[in-house]
Image 1 (cartoon, rainbow, N blue to C red):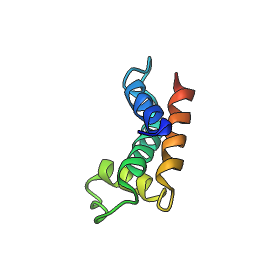
Image 2: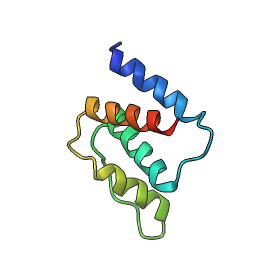
Image 3: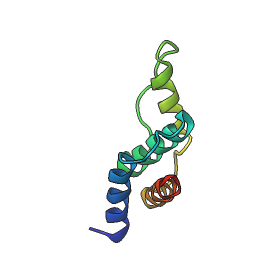
Length: 84
């Protein structure tokens, strides 16, 4: 396992132990970076207008299309570190 992957997994665990819950905007950024790092570019249809949360998640993840797995991992690690 690469050093970056280990740091990413540590950051993912740390994100669940933050003192305060981040804002919805930061939570969306964490979600989208995590999904981009683990699953790659967004796939599937955008949720309908009645699913506002699903749509926001889809849009945030979609905005990262083309970002490499390593770039997304590093950005996730940096964001979690800034929240500690």
